[in-house]
Image: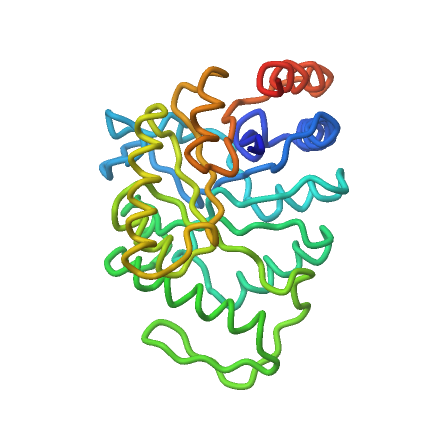
Amino acid sequence: MDIGLHALGIGTGARREVIDTVARQAERRGFATLWSGEHVVMVDDQASRYPYTSDGKIAVPAAADWLDPTITLSFAAAATTTIRLATGVALLPEHNPVIMAKQLASLDRLSGGRLTAGIGIGWSREEFDALGVPFERRAARTASYVDAMRTIWRDEPASYTSEFVAFTDIRVKPAPAQESIPIIVGGNSDTALERVVGWGDGWYGFNLDGVEAVAERVARVTELCSSSGRPRDELYLAVALRDPSVDDLVAVEALGVNELVVVASPPEDASDAPAWVDGLADKWFR
């Protein structure tokens, strides 16, 4: 099982020198993937319930710096050569899918084919309202946008028509370095897992409450694969635990999880970042 690191793009991880240093040291120490998440908008008085904590509140302060993940990962790509890069997750229905297809393909090309596109449907109505995007039917919009992006990456020229997006005989260059950028679906709910099995290339389960929660969700993925006739081993499974322990490694790997993602905030001073990464590596690589 691989170990990933979700540390860049927010707060202290939004500083250029910290991004460079953490990315280089994470690659040296054998981390598989650098993950970077997204919120375009944060608000001080959040009425929408955050789905990944028991109290419904997101831990990141509204005033914290939060970089665009494609830009964050572009800088990480420039500082490294082999470690994979993943949006974890980008909120796809908030974006124009043609522009997003180009941005992701550009990042994949410049990184030498190292990108995974982790995407989610979003949970903050306030964020959608600020962007002028309908909050309702965002799941259907996301599925259509994914289909449209895959069409752009596959066909030249590309044509696509749905309720949410339409284009005819367009060329969006460059093409990705990979034949198609893997799309990993975020979310822990049953409906999120249905999206994983229905049209995703994998799952990013976030802030799960221990090994038992991972086991229950993986079992649900397996059930959905069985009922749909999709081979379970087609899916890449990555999970982040709420309070992970090294004692969880064997149990999580035995469930068929491909990557355990460690979520942590780097130090403010970039000069302290190599030792910080070393401490994580010493803890998790055994």
